[in-house]
Length: 248
Ligand code: MN3
Image 1 (cartoon, rainbow, N blue to C red):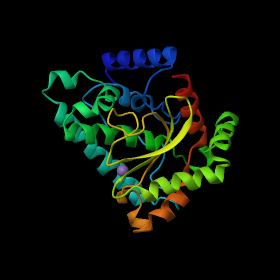
Image 2: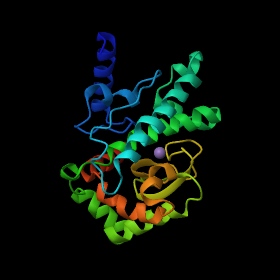
Image 3: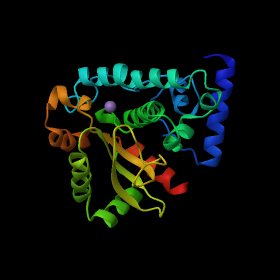
C-alpha cells in the first residue's frame, strides 16, 4: 500500500471509529487491512478480499459458485462502476456510500453497479466459515424475538421476502428510522440505504437472491438456498451490524 493511501485509510478508520456513524459495513477481523477500507473510499474502487476460502461455506454454497460470484460478478460491478465515474469529477469525488444514498439521482449504470459493489461487500462479511459464525448477541436475540416472535419465525419471514422477490434482488433485515427491526426486499442491486428504496433503513442482514448466488448447486430452488443459507451466517458480524445501526 502506498503511503498516501495508508494515511487515507487510517484516517477513514479513525473517523468511523470515533463517530460511529459510518454507513459502510464494518469489516470482519479476518479481512486484510487493505480490504477493510475499500468500501469507504472513493473511486477507483477495488474488489475487497473475501476473508475466507472459496470452499469455506460448502456444502451450503459450493466453491465454484463463490469463486464466480466474487471474482467475476462482484469484480464486474467494481469495474463497471469505475468506468462510469471515471472522468466525471463530481461522481469521482463521491464515496461509495454517497453514491448509494443518492442512487435516484444517478444513471442506471451508477445505481446498479454502486449497489452491486456495496451489497456484495456487505454480503461476504455476514457469512463465515463454521468456526467463525458465533451467536446472535443477547440484544439482537431479544429484538428478533420481540418483533418476530422467535428466531424461527424471523427466518421464515425473511425467507418469504426472498422467495417473494420476483426476478433478481435482495432480502434484508434492517434497522428502520424508528430503530426497529424490519424485513424488506429490493429489486436488482438496490438496497435500503438508497433514496429510491420503498423501505429505508440500515442493513443488518442481506441475502442475495439472484440466481447466480445459488443456481449451480440449488438450480431453480431458491427456497432451498434461503433455508440452507442460515448455516453460513456470521452472527458475530450481524450482531455488530445491529449495534452500529442502533447507534446511528
Ligand atoms: Mn450477487
